[in-house]
Length: 497
Image 1 (cartoon, rainbow, N blue to C red):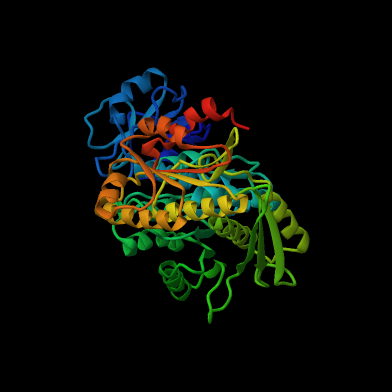
Image 2 (cartoon, rainbow, N blue to C red):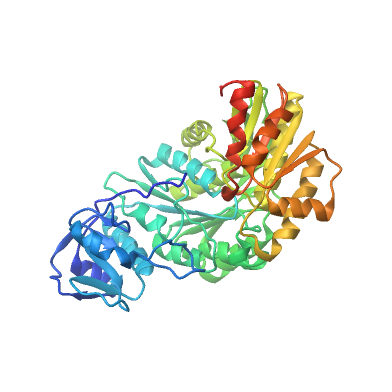
C-alpha cells in the first residue's frame, strides 16, 4: 500500500508564493494568506493552496490525471489554485511555468524561512538500495542526539513526496532526515536543490530503474549528484569505486568534508566507520561490531557493538552508514555516552515491513523482502537467507519475482540473479513473472523449481511445497505483489507469531 501524503498547515501570503516561484498572480491580492498545501482536490483545505500537478509521460512522476482538470473542484472547496501559465484558465490563480518545480521551490523557501535563526541540520539519504532502512536508522540515532526529527514517511522520496514532507516541518523539530529517490535522470539534482542538505549520504550505486536512468555509470552520476547538494559534508560506501571517485571530485572541487563507511580495502586508509565483525545469533538477532574513527569519536577510535533484528550483510552496511551520518551531522566527535545512546537507539529499530523482515507462519520462518527488488537487493537477500538457514540448520526455499523497470538490461540482470540463486543452493526455487521465466529458459537451472506467471498463481503451489522448519525468502518488485505468497501459509501452517 502506498504511503499517504501527509497533510500540513504551512502558511504563506500569495505575495510570498510569487517571490518563491517567480510566478504571476492573477486577480488576487498579494497580501491574502493561504494555509495548507495539497495536490489533491478532494482533501485540499478551505483557504489552502491547490497545486495542479501534471507531468508528461516519461517524466519523473506518473499521474493518471492532469491536476488542472480539478481546479474547479478545488475552488469549490475554497482553495486557491497554482497552475501552469500555458493553461486557458480564468479566475484568481497563481501561474508558473511548471507546477512540480514550483512545489519544490515553495518547500525550499518554507524550510529556509522556518529554520532562520535556529540550527536544524538536514541529512539527505540516497542510493540504489537500502535508503528506507538507513533513513529509518539515521532518524532513530539522530533523535537520540538531537531530539525530535522530521523524517520521510515510508518511501515518499520523489519530487512530490519530499516537498510535501518538508511542509510538515514544525518548531519542535531539531533535525531533518530526508530520503531522496530517483527513477529518471535529473531527479536527484532537483531533490538536492529542494532539501539543501548539510550532509549528503549516498549508500551505493547499482543497476536500478535502468529503463529511465541508463547504465551503471549513468546511475552513479545520478546518485552521486546528491554530493553536489551537500553544504558541509558527504558520505559514501568505502567499497563503491564509482561513488568514491565522485566523492573525491567533490572534495577536491568544492572542499567539503568527506567520510566513508564499510569494511575497508587492503592498502587504503580505513573507513571512518569500519565494520569489524558480524555474528548471527540463534534468536535471529545479529551483533554488528563497528570501529568508529577518531574523526567521529572523541578519544577514538572507539569500538561500538549494536545488537539488531535486521538481517544480512547489508544491514551492517546500513547501520555503519547511519552511525557515520549521525556523527557527521552532529559536527563534532561523539563522546562515549553519545555513542552508547546511538547504539541503543539503532538496536531498537525493528525491520522495515517488507524489507528482509522475519515473520513466522507456524513453524515456517518467512524472510519477507517483498517491498521491492533490483539486482543488488536480490543478491543481499539471497545471502541473508542462506545465512539464516545455515544458522538454523534449516531447508531454504527461495521465491523470486521479476525485477521491473530495468529496460534493456533486464534479461542480463535476471540471468545474473539466477546465478546468485544457484550459489545460494536452495532446496527449491519458486520463480514468478515473465522475465524470470525467460531467464530460466535462456539459462536452464539444475535446481528443483516451480514457475508461475503471477504470485497469485504461485501461492497455493508454494504453500504445498513447504514443510515445517523451512526458511522461506520472498523477494520481488512491488508490481509483482509477492506478498500474496504469504496468504495460504496461515491456513496450512498456522497464524503468524
